[in-house]
Amino acid sequence: MKNIQVRIGTLVTALLVPLLFGGCGMQTLRVAAERGEATAQNKLGNAYYDGKGVAQDYAEAVKYFRLAAEQGLAEAQFNLGFAYVKGNGVPLNYAEAIKWVSLAADQGHTEAQYNLGYAYEKGLGVQPNVLEAYKWFNLAAAKGDQGSVEHRDNLATHMTPELITMGQKLATDFAPKKAASTGK
Image 1 (cartoon, rainbow, N blue to C red):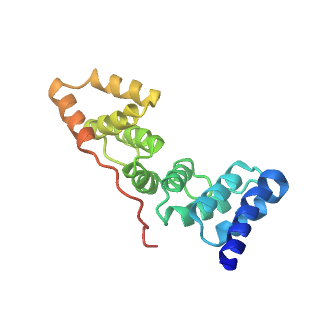
Image 2 (cartoon, rainbow, N blue to C red):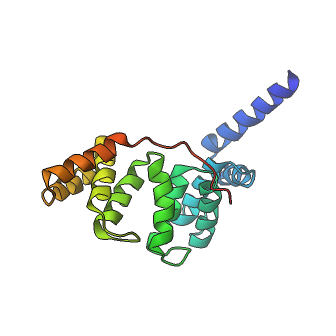
């Protein structure tokens, strides 16, 4: 029982100290990331990407995004895909971006769904596909994403009623996948 109390005390300290003493947060985050905690790895990646609390370093950001993304964290998969789209910390590579953004979108990540719809609409890293674009925009729109609503509705003006029905069915049949490690 004492061992459990010590662990809980350590956990509470690790969570409260950064909140109470802001400067200590980055070290705590780094320790958690190095222990392999995906959420901490993604947050540390964001810190490096944005230069908040550390010097901006895209390569270091990508390192932490990848560690978390390979554990199946949708937000990290999206962030890694975004880095590939921008060429920040990695060479610009739409195909690699699509790989990671798709993994996040498949888990129901709204921003990834919007971006995947956009990729299918414009043919960025994939062959243009109006049905796939409509599906992903429709999924994100159902969660209130206004950009997705606008893109979906604009696409619909160029689609037959039959294609719209097919796109809606693709969205209705979609079931988010559970997070899974990429096995790397």
